[in-house]
Length: 133
Image (cartoon, rainbow, N blue to C red; front, side, top):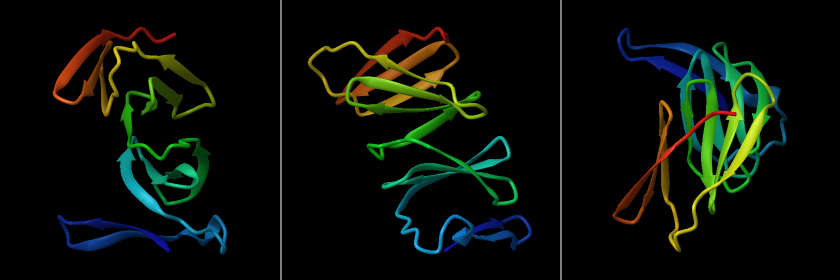
């Protein structure tokens, strides 16, 4: 399996890095891929979020045990599991989990903007203030 970057402007491959650097026996099952701040974030259903530099070199793995969709904002990777918002720093090992208000609802999506967190449940949206700490 390879990590390949294609530049549609020039119609050419600009990066083709083998993922065998991780392990020849690794059985990847990717579900999401994001390029952000010169890094590539590959969500895998079994392993978590694998982080690569802009040359395709493996850097580390961030846990994402429920293989939910993740997002990136400023210097943080975040995702939902149940009634918790999990936030990981993308540059160090700091992480936090924030218990979300239990309104008898199941949150399907989260979006963080500035100091506001938007949660979506069905056809309802909830806005909360987020203060990093």
